[in-house]
Image 1 (cartoon, rainbow, N blue to C red):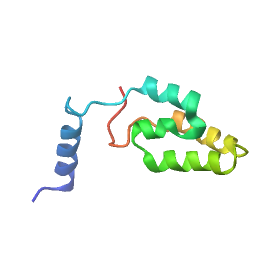
Image 2 (cartoon, rainbow, N blue to C red; image 1 turned 90 degrees about the vertical axis):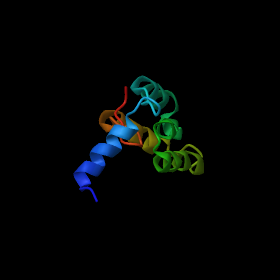
Image 3 (cartoon, rainbow, N blue to C red; image 1 turned 45 degrees about the vertical axis):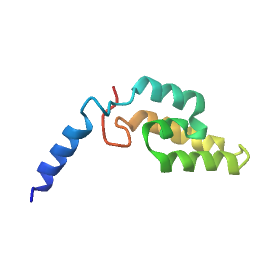
Image 4 (cartoon, rainbow, N blue to C red; image 1 turned 135 degrees about the horizontal axis):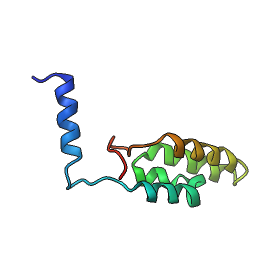
Length: 90
């Protein structure tokens, strides 16, 4: 049995090995800028739930609530530094 701290260290070490790779922050930003209201950047980063939420907000409102998804995208661009697997962007 290992401590929670050891577990997190080993998890981080395994996930950051080259075979998994990390996502590009530039790609994340470009996807957010051009397709942010559809949540494409969140799908790319592995935040599937967020991506589905943004897509549904835009599509189900027939685009009338695009500004909600756009505001959400701008906030994410300012605060998100890791992908869905908790690996920092390149």
